[in-house]
Length: 464
Image 1 (tube, rainbow, N blue to C red):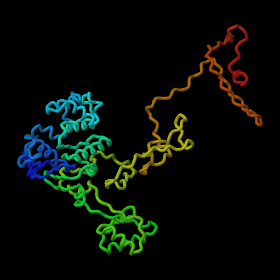
Image 2 (cartoon, rainbow, N blue to C red):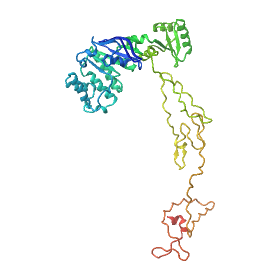
Image 3 (cartoon, helix red, strand yellow):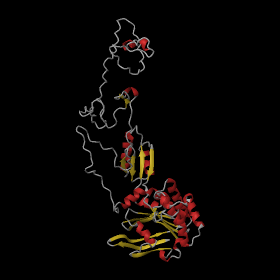
Image 4 (cartoon, rainbow, N blue to C red):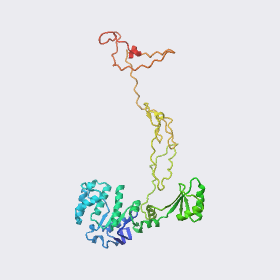
């Protein structure tokens, strides 16, 4: 059993712990709760003899830690998972601790298997993740099979499977009759793991009771009642009857009623007497987190403020409306909505690009596009297409035809009533021939008849 009597610790003008008295009994998991800077880590260090108290005393089994014979065999602790030489293998680290305490080497392999690190026992600890470091620290605490165990944030960095494993481990150790003292900021995990709570604030004791008693003493339960949605007059009728009976009725956003001051059987009788049908009648109690926040709201040293974003806000464009506040933002249980997904229009509604390819319409913030782009979500009209750049390079002109080459005459328009000819296939590209002179006409390679002029190739039959 751990017992503290009038424990006080001062660091100069700062009083970290003041007149703290409590007992941690065996056979139960005792949670140690408190805001940041409340003195939890300082108290644990004084329990383990790492810090000397200014006044008062703390004992383990009736003795100070420093006077316990072979203390590592009786007390195991995890205060800082990073207190490991990064160049040592996990097994060598535990083997050094075992040899200092007279623990056999086979126990090292046993605890490595208990924490699930047997496959990385030969790896250096500097390459371990945060969760693996926590497992190694828990293995060091279990090394001497002690009867008293202290853990400071043991689930920090663990995945869900590791958190469940630590929870079951704490309960199993307490079921064996050991003293388990756990400090944590995870209220939901403490509600599932701890049997007893010790809560401190600014170095002073705030509560020393079981989890159920702590929740009941620092919260108020209520009943949730729902009447048929199609008959709002029944809800008004029930509200009047419950108020006359001494209950306090508050409407909720979904149409239900929150009732305090009356037990559930009394609410049911009132609904029956007033001939009101109920769709829901359920009890609700506060969570450990809600009770803890109510208890420690006056003992918090570090409080956050609203980010004003001074000098970082972008000016609103002329004619645009400022963003509207998100409904519910800043309220409890509010979660940010997912980012807007870019929606693409059907293929026949997409805007053709400059090269003929289809492009998606303007994005949710009305990016600059072609005239006629719809307005953005804040009412700002998308700007028109940018003006031509006077400094842009001039596009290359079509090449000038060499002198002497005859230009292909355009096809004569077909007479009215004549059948339409199908368009001719494009002639394959021919290598450029030297320009003919006025004295001689070009001849073929065999010296035969001269090559017909280029104008004759415009006929469909010649092109083929």
